Image (cartoon, rainbow, N blue to C red):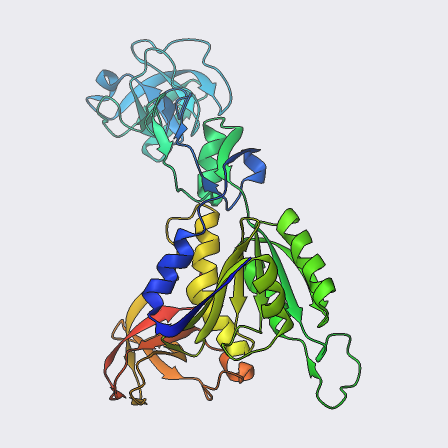
Length: 410
């Protein structure tokens, strides 16, 4: 395989378009409804049943002929009772009523329901009704919610709890969805320690893989944790080739800088079709993307904060597209900076990690976290958003800023 180098600094939008264009949605599968939670519908769901399936009462009360309650108060003969789940066994005639519960089917002859609050039971067989109601009052008609042949959910709908409830209500036992992406994640390097043992000189504790595995799980991927792979070309090649057979995508961190002479770059350059990029952003300037036997590989920077930013801007949207989502990026809002945000002109877009909250004015007010270095994960870990700061000299306190949220279901 060949290695493609993009020596110049590339705009973020161009890299995002390149990556997204290389990560089409995974082929649809049919799954039982109960196993499709949080997945994205790949074929329109068309109802074969009506909801509700019959005319039923919207309240607890009395099923009546509306003509019988035109003048009130009026005393009607109680000729029966219908609970939810029961079937009517007689019709309602002139001067008659049937006690009915919410959700119970309407009896023949009745065309309205008077609420129980507007009734007074005179005897076991006689009720006094004090409110007139028009025809159709408090009746939920068959098909009011869904009719046979309705397209209930279009392609691209994510199955949440309410969606699953509707699928159950129309008896959609099987749905066609895009599957969860099965994603391998790994760290490489003899210097990485993940067993809790004391550190020798030059060693550091593994953190990126731990972080990325949880980020992948949080967004709904099935995660395959490949652990820490040593700086051995044969071992790394074997791990990557096995992952390309078993998984839909591979995420690694480190070894993507232009000047690195790293085992990751050596191995991927030999076995995969890779493009090594420098992006006009800070942090997360270096990034690599390619395919191994058709399986996308995301090469994220080794600095932990850079790895987070790169994942959020590039890997996460692409993986969401693979799983069929239509909204690929996190929600963004126009916020207000509580303090001046200074920066120098360097031709890059800066992504400042911030904390924010909605104030009484209804706007999202942000302040930077304590440290902005690409290696300072502890400060960034508590950030709930990023301010997108264009090239320039920064903005003064009180200025509007574009904010990319890092919390929520997107």
